[in-house]
Length: 519
Image (cartoon, rainbow, N blue to C red; front, top):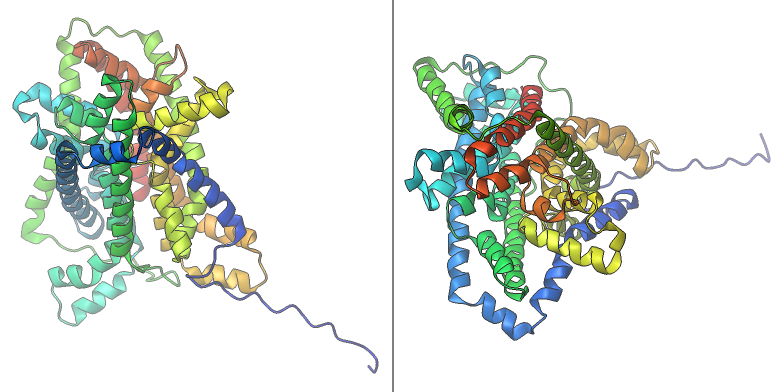
C-alpha cells in the first residue's frame, strides 16, 4: 500500500570468532575470579620487597635457591612423565580395547584421588624406610595424581569420532601408527591439561615431600616461615614458585595450541569397535592390576594393619562423626565457590584465544602452585587489615580453597566446553540470543557433565588439603586431615589410622561416582 513504511528488521547477530573479545557477562566475573586468585601475589609483593629489592634478589639468586629449583623441577618432570604414561595407557585400555572388566578397572583407577599424598607417603615409609628421598616422593606423588591425566584423556577418547581411526586403518595404517598419528593428537588438549594439574600439584605439595624428607620449595618455605619472624625469605621463594607456575601454564597453552576437536553433529551412530588385545590381554590385565594394587590396595592395607595391631587406635565414633561432618561441610562449600569462579574463566579459555583470555587463565592458575601456608597467611594479612570480621572464621578457609584449587575446576570446565561444538553457540547468536542467554541455554547445559566432574574433583582435593586448613580453621574446629596430621606428627600412627581411613572412605565416594560416570 502507498504511504506505508516498512520497518527494517534487526539483522542477526554476527557469530563471534575464537579471537573476538569475550562478552561482558563472562568477562566481568572472570576478572573478579582472576583478581581473587591474584590476591596472594599482592601479599607476596609486600613481603618480598619489605627489606628492599636487593635483599629479595639475594635470596632468589642464592645457591640454595638454585638447588631447590633444580630439585623441584626434577621431581615435577619425573612425576608428570610417569603420570602421562599411566594415565594415557589406562584410559586407552579401559575405553578403546576389549579389556575384560574395563568398566571396573576404569572406576578403580580413579580411587587414588581419595588417597592424600601424605597418607601414601606414610604407607610406603612404614613398609620401606629406605624409600625416603627423591624416589619415595616421586612414587607417592605419582600414585595419587595420575587420575588427573587418566580422567580427561578417557573422556576425550569417548568424545572422538571413531570414523577417523577407522579411515586410517582402511588406508593401511596399523594400530600403533593409527594411535600415534590420529588418536594421540586429538588427546593432546586433555593430556596437556591433566599434566599441568599434576605439575602444579607436585610443586604445591607439602605433606609427601615433608614425610619423605626431600627438600623442595614448599618444604623450604614452610621451614622458613616457622624458623623466623622475618617473612621476606619465604615470600621471595614463593615468588619463584609463581614464576614457575606462569611458565608452566604458558607451556601448556603452547602445547595445547589451537587444538579443539569437537563434533559438529552426533558423530557415528554406533560405538567404536573395541580393539582386540589378543595375546596382549594377559599383559594388559597385569598392568591394570599392578597399578591398582600399588596405588589403592597397598595404602589401604597399611591402614588396616595399623588399625588391627595398634593399641592406641580407639574408635571415638562421636569425635569421628563430628570431624567428618565438618570436613564434608567445608569441602562442599569450597567446591561450590571454586566452581562458580571457574565457570567464566573456563569458558573464555576454551572459546577465546586472545592475549586477554590467556592472561585471565594464567591468573587463575597463580595460587595453585603456592604452598597452602602462603595462601593462608596472605588471606590472614588481608582479613586483619581490611576485613577483620572474617578473621578466624569459616569463610576465610573456604576462600583459601577457592584460591588453591581454582585451576582444577577451570581445567575441567575448559575441557568440557572444548568438547561441545562452537557452531551451536554461533547459531544461537545468529538467532538473536544475547550472550547471557547463549551461556545459560547452550554453553552451560552442554558443558554441565564436565563442570560437575570438575566440582567433584575440587570437592575431593578440598577434603585432603592440609597446610591452609591447619592455619585458617576456626578455633575448636578440626577436619580429618588436621587430626590425621596432628596424630602423625606426634608419632601416634595407630591413633591417626582411623582418621585416615574415614578420610579415604569419604573421598572415595565422589571419586568412585566420578569414575563410574565417565565409563
